[in-house]
Image (tube, rainbow, N blue to C red; front, side, top):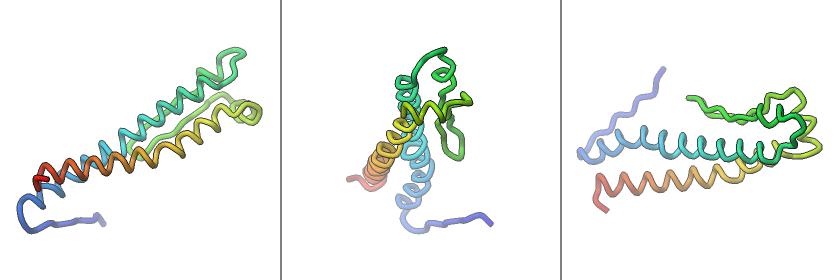
Length: 120
């Protein structure tokens, strides 16, 4: 059963809520996740030890409608990470950076919508 929210009242409030959801999804969720995943991918690649280059080339980030993930496809990636924490460092970077970026984006979107619809 889908959730429906009907806003009634002054047109500015209805317009602000209509504008809120797609903007929050795009600017407060999608962009920070994509940015942090790409930065984490570059971090993992730069820290990965290189013997043949396969491990480094197997590292990539993926983003879809349900979120994103950082991947190292080499079958020995976990064993190397236990010796040289290239992947763990990238995951720690995601965990420490993403919440702040999302909160900052949410605050910016709230301010933008407030100024756009309520003049502030």
